[in-house]
Image (cartoon, rainbow, N blue to C red; front, side, top):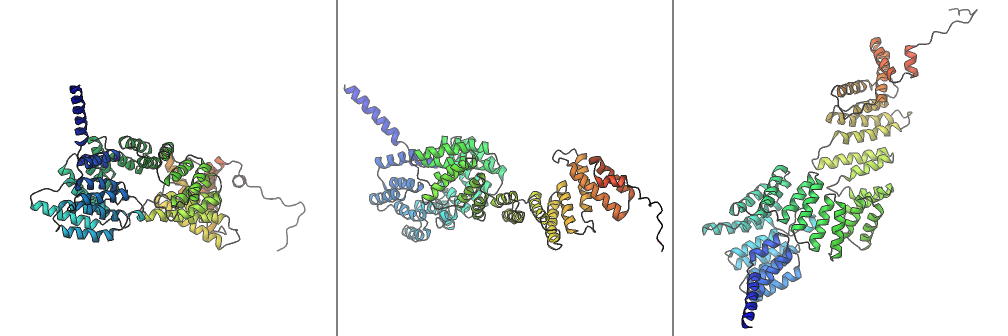
Length: 574
């Protein structure tokens, strides 16, 4: 019996030792890998085994990462009481102010703590620098990141640490360099951010966190080759690193590789802990990768598990709209509005898309016009243009088309020949509907169309529709038909068609009616203006091969005989 008791005691001691053999580093490793429950277990275990100021601080820091201000404050207070001389818990309490978007008030208190420790406490300097950069989240709206960071102060403090450690012939830790890199990234200084992260990797070649962050810097700089290389390097080193899968998925979205992106996001939730928050975040990521079924699935799971996130309405609303369930999408968004959720421009975009799907174009336009000036990711003006064009409200379509071009130019995006062509056609059709009797308004509108056709051609001079429509616009400008302004553009139209034929292009489908129009117009031009009978005959012959029954062409080749004089008629006297 005694042996059994001893065995049970021994097993219990072994389990206890295993439980508490996990270190602070293990806790932060779990936290970095988006496994908060395992991190919490480690930190709480350390406090239970040794309720020191340091252990309370680490548990409080865990709560800061979760933005759980109340538990963070309570934990830091306990740490302060357990060890009043340990300044870290004071740093933790002040750090809450930074997370709550009050960095100015926090700086006053941080400066006091640094002064009291005479700028010699490396841990205080490091955790203060970390507080100045840890709450900023790339890609979040300005209101979220407002007053929750001070990258300049973070860099200064890390430099102080590095100077002190180098004097003592010690090297700063990789985490010091990572904080410095994060601060430079907030300042949008990619070069110095990469230098700092590379220094972390030099200290610890297996530091996947730093490697992924380097990839993120390159992604922001649109160096996609380096981005992919760094993310792949990190995941090859540690395929279980959840944030690496997430970042790789985000990179793939930018390249339009939506299926692959979805695969990486699904790996992300496999490797991370599927908390309600991570589940909801995965739903959003899957939505961005156009995996709408997955977005709905994880949204429902997060909801069942009690996540507190107004984006539940959005994910259901947006996904239903994208899946063609327009009324269900609108119903979810309406439910969100009725709950008093603060509106967001994307809500207006999806209300607009939903109503467009239901054929309620006027409502769709009303919502889209609210979203368009605020949306920096989606060119909503292009959607507005297409609705206006479908409504045959061509002048309003042209306004939206021009705004679509401006939207691209502001974001240094390529404006294609098709962008100009859309507006050119809007203006051309507007001119077509102006009464012919308006010999000022109609030609003026056609001249605006001509300018836009010219811009299309300047981008792509090998697309026949640009030339024939420019010819037609010039026919409107030449309202009395005496200047034959369309001629050079009909000539160019035919030449480009012939060139594409010779190149055996499969992109352009020949339109016989358009060729007939060009041959007939140019035949008339050479007949009336240049009197080039050979050219006239060649052009009319080509036209006749397309439309043998055209009365004008028939009349040219078979002129009616002159009328004979009536019998007994006498010529008039001069």
